[in-house]
Length: 168
Image (cartoon, rainbow, N blue to C red; front, top):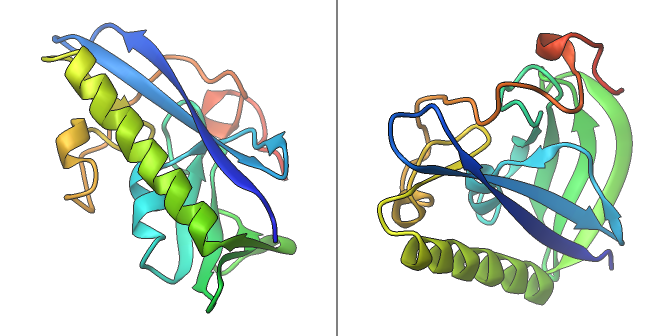
């Protein structure tokens, strides 16, 4: 089985009219941190959903910049991520398969929720924002679709919308 961990780097954000904390989540797979930002909402949706899901986005928060879909499937003993798709889920840009044991996936999800709730308790009144989402920790799993809000004024990975070609 492959190994999965999720790390969150909270960053205080300005310019939203109210205190905000950007949550930049990264997936660490088999000890390697993936460059794009893990969409927290879609990560939780992927616990029960199947098919190509937009799990990763550019650090700028613009889906279509440095993002991709992952084919998600449920196995009896594992959560399976298959292939990497360009912003169009019909276009495979990388073939491969990762299998994460269910107990490990549950631990990652539980730890992620605990971190969100801790941030909410420690920073009352501060809006928690994640790439491709705009929500408080208490609503991060309740709403499937949210209005888009940028987390950062600049993309550190320099993708399409940020001025450079995406990584393929």
